[in-house]
Image 1 (cartoon, rainbow, N blue to C red):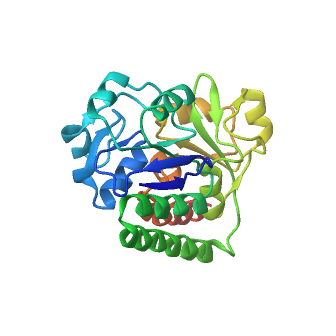
Image 2: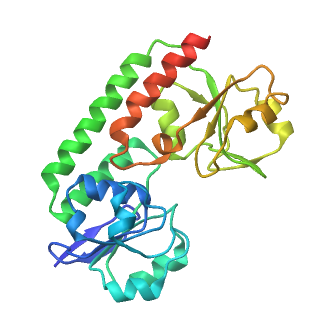
Length: 266
């Protein structure tokens, strides 16, 4: 038995090497597979789309905000991995009465790298986790070097429609924007609701419309263009900005490509 401290500063008592793991977060499911733990995963959420075999071969325990407790109890896991923002408090508290629940809390790249190392430690995959974290770190260091002397366009990053919602400060998306050389036009924290008047007053250089959680498309650019006639618009892959597991291996290159495209467009 080992007692560890998770990213919410909770003490979690774990078996020496967990054998029945449930992931409550899509990006962490992908990370567990990357660390070679597929045989030890017993349950995932219905939103765990990467890798594709996860939902085909593992038991679905519900969504990130609504767990199927009877299914989880049937699986009787010895490790559940969740996230403060993506999961709901009542469900986590209920599960913690019965099982070891290790919680992540991530708003920066450094938080994500520490999470990868911690999961490697508690699952006995330390070497793979260290190599993965260092690979990601180097990719982002190189990205920052490439964008160090570029202009820093002011970006409004939209995540929802009806109402309009955007990613503000103290979010992982905001940290990704900073690493990639953009300025977040929003000074408000978290994910504020914005009126059309507020968006007009923000006067962003660029508007990024994320593919998730709301699936923005070209028709939404057409809807927003009269409101922000001087802004440029870009549909962006939300997973690259908001998934904080092994997907980060690809995020830095994706951001670099967006930067090149934006400079080309002027």
